[in-house]
Image (cartoon, rainbow, N blue to C red; front, side, top):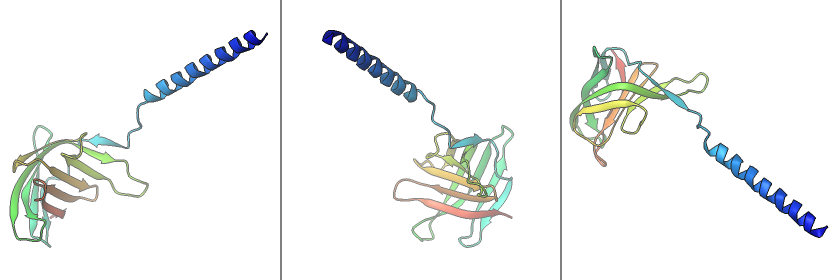
Length: 155
């Protein structure tokens, strides 16, 4: 009798362990829910300026569906040092906004689901963003020397 109870208990333990293992295995195969999406929508073509720093950028929509943003940005340390840039974006990344919030589209080295290249200058980091309200922001440069322009609005 005692042996029969031990066998049942052992069987229940084995079945329980298998159910737990299967449950964990199934959960690890779940696809994480996306918090955003990619977009081929580009900012409107034209000239964008920032009157505070006298920075500007031009947006060109190319025949192949890409968007090229060119312009001049200032060194973020407050100096009057400027650098030219040229960034080509194929695909933007954006997070789903909270209700009533604006969408910010992003591309660059920090946004792995975007598709973009910096053509000028050659650098290891760049980020470009625009909001659905039409404001552009760009930063680029090696670690410790970031150039930036932002709050650019279409003229």
